[in-house]
Length: 303
Image (cartoon, rainbow, N blue to C red; front, side, top):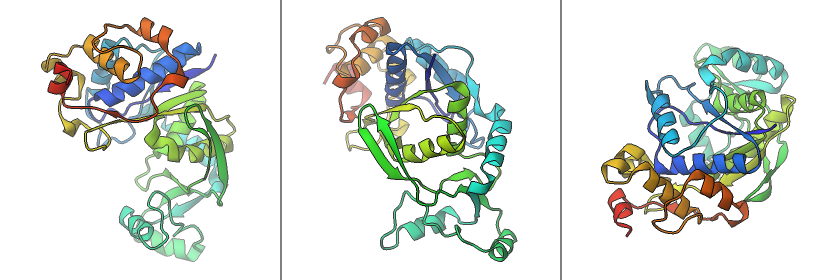
């Protein structure tokens, strides 16, 4: 039996956009007979907040989102990431670039902000030895300009060039792109539902999955929740987390109704349950544009 997943980072409270994506991932999984798993992505120890994973799980439970089995906790799986890196030893290279240097190279004419410009790709061993004296290197994937197709349930077939992404940070912490691929394969994840801001990274992750001997999952990249300015919703927009909305008079049932309405699965003000939403769910009828979230007082008043 395959599985879908939701994988939050315990660095802050989930806002209504995060909860909407979690609900969509649950609906995609349950409507196709898959298990639904939770992964706690806590590798960035500096940003992790104590107790936040428990708070996130409580918020999801308040909406009725349930999971199968125990969560996978990334900080407990460092040995698995090290083993994956060993298997990729001939497909990596040391990178000594700082984020600033990469940004400056990408901002030059013909640069691409989201891609590594290849500065360290062909350094000689003498060059690397010299640079190690000044800075500990990260490890990058050597993609050799490969192009990788993926099939997305909402976006169709997308083919993109694979990026030389970081697999091991220079502080020794496994990077996101490595950990997510290793963990999806470990958990039997064959369906990934997440925000469409992550679509550009998907070809690289699918390519890395194949390098590690696994099959890439199917994908569904769903539109984000945004603020009135069209920017990705964030906690700083105010009144967007479950406790904040509760303080404004919107309980979990009302928030679930609002999310369902945004997905065209409920009428305004209609009381719904996850069982009702599961009966109504049809991926082909989902909105293809971002959901503009207005402040909580407006949500409460229905304006």
